[in-house]
Image (cartoon, rainbow, N blue to C red):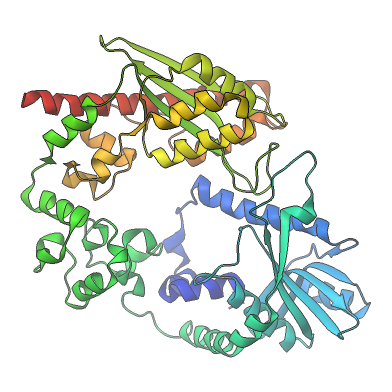
Length: 499
């Protein structure tokens, strides 16, 4: 059994999940990574590749397994100064180092880990310092002295202006002291992991003490006693660790078994009561107050954004969202509706100019801009304002007139147990408007939209593919704003029933 640094990091997250991956891999068959998860992996690989521009004359170890170990040894013996993906195996532990640089003055090698992040993370399972400690231990057991360790990560202050400046895009931080300080702890964890994986399967897993979003892939297998809708699904219960731990320690998994509901406050309480009573809770007065303050024309608006390690356009930094599309449904006071849309279809260094120009044509700065999760749209508009200051008055008027439809649900003015504690439009829509669905679309999620747009504007897509993707993107984004219109209509109807 070979154990990689990825295995080690997974062990620090959920050791049972790692045990199952090694001993019962069939549990992971058919479990596909999402478009977003695949993109994260691709971005990590891209950052690793692009960071090599910082090192002239490096040699890439392009072999695999034992061959890579032997090739690395040969490169080191012949005095190669810089190695990319240098490979080492000691006992069952196997690593590929992003960058290894010979330091003749200190009589050893500098070890660098490249991370597609804007900062050094020091919290498990994404603990960069422990990651480096693991690598250093394996390399030094192989007889190679490591004299310096560092993390190469993205510079959050960098903004593209023409060709990429790699010396500004990346930041290199020396973390040698931290890595050395954690070596004993990491070494013990490595031995514990090695021993744990030889033992029989244990019952349960520690993810049972985590909220639903932080649980491992095999949670259901390890914890079959937990119902599909459990205490783990209570709104942000992961932030109330003492309460969750108390329930789990006492074998309370179902909401109906909670014996201290008085401990629940705010959104948690509203979700629990809606589930227990089976009744939808609606604050008609508050909803009427909020919707009554909207100014016509009502403009239901949604951006789709693209993000990348390597900024695609001038003025943008790593992971900074480029708004590449919007959909707009306009509702007039007399009830008439109109749909407008815009999609950037070609790559350019200043690609958002046409988008802003079109927004000026389509949007009325005096009407309310209705969105779902206003922070996202607001940040995109503020970025456009930064890039196009000549449109300051218009863009600021949009920011000033934003109304977040999601807040009616996140503030518990409308609570249904079938929302499962969520205020996501993907959870709200099937409950309030069951006839409107994303399931028939070729693109069903925002991360898919981003991935398909990237392919569309690239040079690999055929003319036919570009047209098909364009149509899919427009259809997906259109449904986002139509969903808001239909939800708004349901809310209006609920008010009028009592008027």
